[in-house]
Image 1 (cartoon, one colour):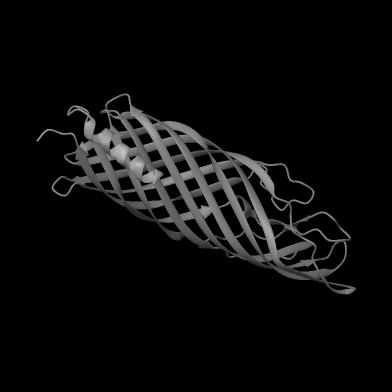
Image 2 (cartoon, helix red, strand yellow):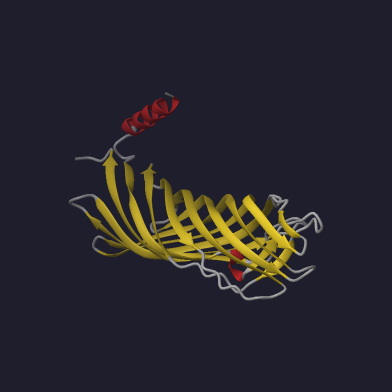
Length: 298
């Protein structure tokens, strides 16, 4: 009921605006192809705590490969009072990690099925003909199921296997600029550059954990502690857009790249090794949006 009332009020405000205060609403879908190199792709991981060793032990394998994946999502936006705008976009992608284990004193080989969700919300003002200042809120969330096995030679020889679920949530504010430069006719060049601070946290919970040692089979004591961290990130995108006036449809094709650097202090029972690590995410994106204008003169 409350959401319905808010929509009615918003429509009433739009309908009440004077002719010179035109409002443009856009909504549409997008699909892309993205590659991702997360901070844990360096192969650093952790053996879980045990009764004899009540803290997690760092382990090392070769770098984890995360094949590129298709993504899809939706977006919506509004431009009002000539120069003000607000937009929001959601994007989803599924990934499957492919590790290449390399035996060392502690080695883990794991496979992760990952669901990643990205949400971006921009509010801004066109202070010049082609340039706008942007305030943004960005959130990226991913959850995964992990199947893993490990071999350990220190402090004693053992091996084990487990199944676990993990989750990571990062969200924070940012600021930047947006460009829209006409090229020819109904073709324009779009660009966006923002800097962000993204506090985050992660959790890791075992479905089961078994360990074989010199004294026989035992259950692991898990789980790991929850951990917090934050990152400083930058995002850049560039696209060419074409507006079809007769259909009020805007088609755009371009690319984007996002990088984040993490600050993190590993706890004794922690499972993350993010300190100083980088997260890279980028790809190509095709979008189609329908634009509807209100308050314009016939």
